[in-house]
Length: 92
Image (cartoon, rainbow, N blue to C red; front, top):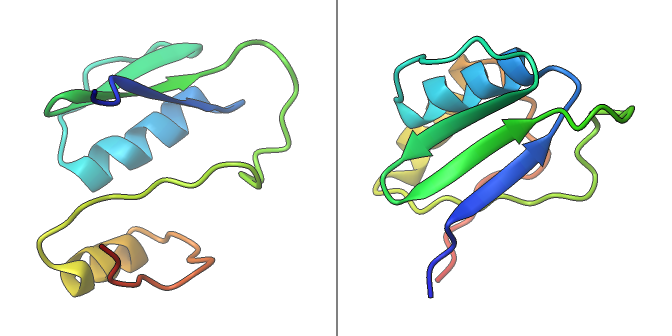
């Protein structure tokens, strides 16, 4: 079994989708204000506004990424202006 899709709910679809496209190295391909797919390899990341008010504080989500160079990717996130809640850790 593989995860086929992860969906992030937000009030600002273009901004969040653009962030993850830049992070994942995916070309911009949509300007839809309500729903965008960010495709990377075999898993789809979907950014969606279902019309409900959200506080956009992301308290209830956790995303884990498998990377070859954790320090390089951490520096990339910092250079993109990401606010880091918990520094990276190597885990199995």
